[in-house]
Image (cartoon, rainbow, N blue to C red; front, side):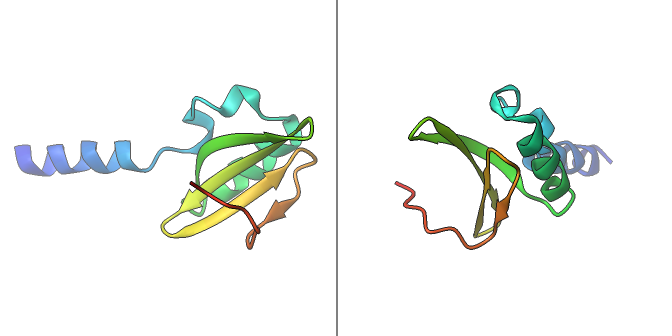
Length: 83
């Protein structure tokens, strides 16, 4: 039973909802709505990139990268370079 409990705790930590991310407070309201919706499908908010005075939220789900613009528009096939 201890192994089962440890596994469940590990799985809970692995899948962090976007609302629990350290980046959450830096999102616009529109980005929060979009990120929350994507979180239901397993996306995690990884970081925010600032370009030309605008923020771009970057989320991952497995090997998939998705970005959310300040106005909440979701792009599931972004042309973005990740280092």
